[in-house]
Image (cartoon, rainbow, N blue to C red; front, top):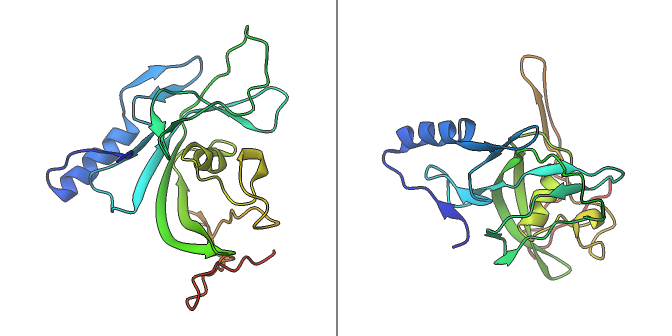
Length: 195
């Protein structure tokens, strides 16, 4: 299995250890940030079988809207090495500043669009990088439908299938939105609502 699992002892103790590992992980220093020594895709021992994390640092590219994904030797997704995307900068004198980016992914359900298999995920960014969710889906070789910048299929839909369902500002506000991608139980097809 391509996602690495940590060993566990007791469930509650392991959850505390897992949270500590994510927050105080041994790290090496980049020019301006910390790059953790966690694998690019992993599970915590306390996680459910449908949960995993993507941990691949990201950097801004001068003059480009797209983010740069750090190359690494580990495999993620379908067993292929991940290549840097949008690496059009031929100036080798500057090195981009990569910053830690971690996303928790939960598989909600598998369905179809036009008889093609798709997976609905709950993505929770644990760090806040521009395009983090979009880049991390590219890393695991499952780009977001409609996200042409990061390799998503634009044939099946005319919009990017990325939607925030909850906004929570502690002690101020919590708002939830309806699901714009409901699955038809009779045929397993996802209906994409245009917003």
